[in-house]
Image (cartoon, rainbow over all chains, first blue to last red; front, side, top):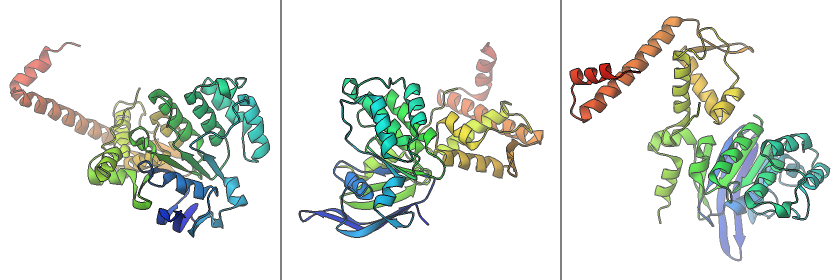
Length: 231
Length: 119
């Protein structure tokens, strides 16, 4: 059984086709890059996987189950924008996550925050964008999930912090879990990817093993992407 | 050691090269137990699957072997490591001579330059 299976998925908003007949599946233990330009449909796809939108057509299965309450328990989602109350302190958010998710490991979160030099007494409103992104990533990676879905985890952070974030992702996903990372910052992230999915104008135009693709095209994923989507 | 990767070349091949240097230089000696895939991937900062692929490649070259349930070990055959070292040294030497040829220097001159270098 596949960890994630997307079948004939379509999403239409106001007569506009955002996703057109999307089919793919993801096994356990892989890091997948969901790569596409702005407006390609990445976030819509991710929201559908997280049950924040309803498909117009088609279905999404997690471990063979239709999206719903049960699947939300096993998916840990990092949204593009923060939903946390900025008046909270980091430790309050930890308590909140602990109450909310059975599979949240508060000790792990505290350890990771310490490793990243983040103070759990600090208020979120006093943190920089990069610090907030780190806090959110730590929260998401501290859940013992089957599937981690990270929407633009590198968006607002400097290159040094990007490396930190990649390390955090790498060292904290267990071998039975998979990670989907959506991004357009390909060169920063491509070395940790097992597989890439290119999405453009609502369609999947390529799914491949990352190293096989490099070997075949004799260039980086970033370069292949740029060539394919040249304006 | 800082590991840098060129995104234009499959990552597992680059990890494989680093691993070969480890074996040649004796960082891991004949018969020695290797760290786990997990530990390696943390060190190289690569995906565990990529690490696994590099190790599988080393195994297919008989440079390492898996002892059931016990982990992976460096081969006990020193000849294999010596051969690897020899091949690697030839590759390095060739690339030196190619570089010298590009600036118009022949083999004999190139060797003179080599001898002039004190370390």
